[in-house]
Image (cartoon, rainbow, N blue to C red; front, top):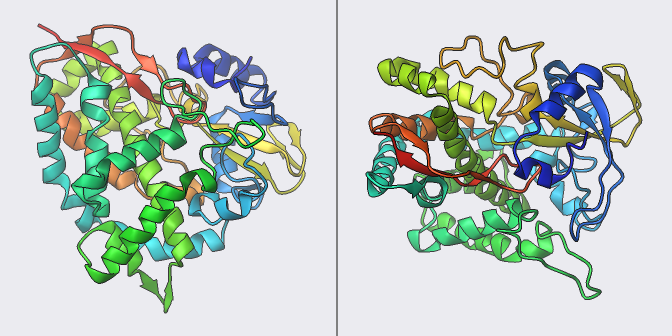
Length: 408
């Protein structure tokens, strides 16, 4: 049961295979076979049950983000020291030091200041496609989180297209629609996410940092540039890596969650009617969307020592990949897990992670989803008008096309 190949996920979430793994082999060995121009890897343990995924995420002393970073594919050894400077690829206590520095930049007051703009922007984008068939991903939800993120970071309007270009380069490298093949002098494929291939992004981050030092504003990037705790500040490299993280994660998680939630409503008209009849259900409905369509499919850790997980012996140095998309529908934890219940309580899904790496941008993501769906549900219901197209990825649960029409 191959749950590694990104082409498997392009055909739809392999829920049957994941269920069989949860039942019979919850920590299963997966081969990293060659995919297209990408070479084979050493393989990994796929963790599919809720309790085991939660344990891995909450015990960095056993399952490290730092040793091999957090993507399934091993980075180039030459890139690893640089990649380890990103908070996503750190372990405590260093990770906690950085989190303590950056958390004040994401104050609720600063985020909620954008709520009205986000809702107005969502209304404008939806009104532009009202009354005709449209592609939600390409005409609405690719643009909305990008503009919101640019506002949050203080990126000028003229530069916002760069954010989308960088996101597609990093997230879409496995997808034939987005990938731009890059090869070295010997003709071997080069990871488009490597620092050498993202020099333009890091250069822009340095320029933006310089601008915010001279012309501070009430935005997250100004707050990060000037952040200081006990006399300590973010280094230039740390700022560059935060820019990378915010541009990619801050854009693509919401870009994936919005069409995923709309697809769920279109596929579950009874749930759609329930939320329309009682708007107080919207916050819990959004949590249910995140559970059933988590923006991130998987994350990788590396075992720091020989350890037992669900009866499987994992050797020091082995790759361990947690499947959020499987844990969130684990029958051992969620009753009727494939039922879209807008009023589900409790709903302790793992869409935004768990433990020390709980997503910093979760509040902003939820705020954008609330604003968007409040506007969408004020309009007539939508129905599928073609076949959705999924991103070819074993990392991001993306929809690159969602053709819809307005139900009559």
